[in-house]
Length: 567
Ligand code: COA
Image (cartoon, rainbow, N blue to C red; front, side, top):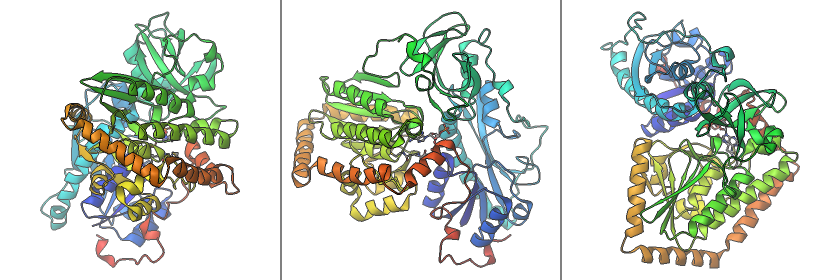
């Protein structure tokens, strides 16, 4: 089928559905929901058999839904309506939530139900629930809905009209800042976390720090006590604030002056004066190392997967410390939501000289990749629990083996960021795994890659685990088996031999120098595309058109199909 995605953005859920439905053999084109006339034009050009709205902020125009089957994936249980579905579910402490696929009609989110799925809720940020539970449920529900389409067309099946009196879900309004507000003198840790989690990543909770108004993000429970509301200290680049019964660590804030999310210590110079609560001289609170059965596990859970210069340096120190341990295997686990998304573009944007900070950041990233590539005493594994993009995807390839959870989406390319060339030794790592032609295709195509497809082309070595606990458990079993394998020494020697041969034919330094020459031009050259693209990405400038590589119906040479797609 030709399926047109009408969506506010090509976000994680949209990318996952794009990958899944493409793998099922459907032809997908994408149009950003910019205005009604653009949507109508897209339908006329693509003549879809189905319109799917994975992430919509406005109603679908009547001229479209009257003539085409339009299915909307709503992140709420049956009967739930309104723009803040997940926000309310978190704030209200729902034990179970879901996704409903419904048909677009006059009232938003109130059309007949094609499919629905539920999942148990977890204490987590809204964005994390969206990227994991909501996405998995949406994939199942959309697949179920598509399977019903032939019967619907044949007239042998009809979607159930929404029975609002019987449904558990209700219409809820847009959540306002007053609904999210924290009362620091009365709210316990669970309540404070629910308020912060339900607004993370957008819009955050309006509050204040050091007497200045700001929005807060990236909170975790923290083991400390103090007078409710009091700032107890600084840990890493975040601050610890007492609640009624404990404390929370707050990692990021956005002030009206800065306008973008940054680590608290980067926003408020006052934070620097607060005493470090925990003595972690080399590492940051986002980095954790553990060991079992001859395997070292390195967790690095940077907010949004963004790795600043300091983050890369701290991780390098942690990695080097791990290589000194009497273990045989090191597993790079990244974070639960993202493995890594490469350079920290927010920090770069906020720096006095974004060019200089970009340069420092990419060099720190390259230093980290080089250390992993040159490990001679350990076999190394990247175990991708979450998605990886740009430099973060190539950081993963620096390890000897790369495994991923089944639902992971990779964006192993840089060009979407203003034609950035990229580094992280990609020009060595990518062709080595997928061949020169495929490497060029991936870089040029700028499309998301599903884990299964990535494994088929050799980008990944293994894909397993339908959800996070299953993936992590199996990754641990496999890593521990590798550590005790009778041929461990032979494998280690083979890896070192191959590295030495590769080095002799072309040194890592040469790859790096070539890549950085292009990057220097991106950062300091005449063409400001990278700076412009980063500015729009970080400031979340609304799209004014859909990129051509996504909207295939707008490609030169697109031939409008005959009218079979119309109802
Ligand atoms: N630096 C800073 N913030 C980043 C980031 C980065 N490298 N990558 C992602 N983010 C932030 C986004 O701004 C967004 O912020 P929010 O919390 O305010 O919503 C959040 O992470 C989630 O990103 P989003 O784009 O919504 O996630 P996605 O899963 O839909 O898309 C990517 C993933 C990787 C395709 C997309 O985030 C991306 O293109 N990132 C930039 C990668 C890059 O070019 N890095 C620099 C070169 S190495």
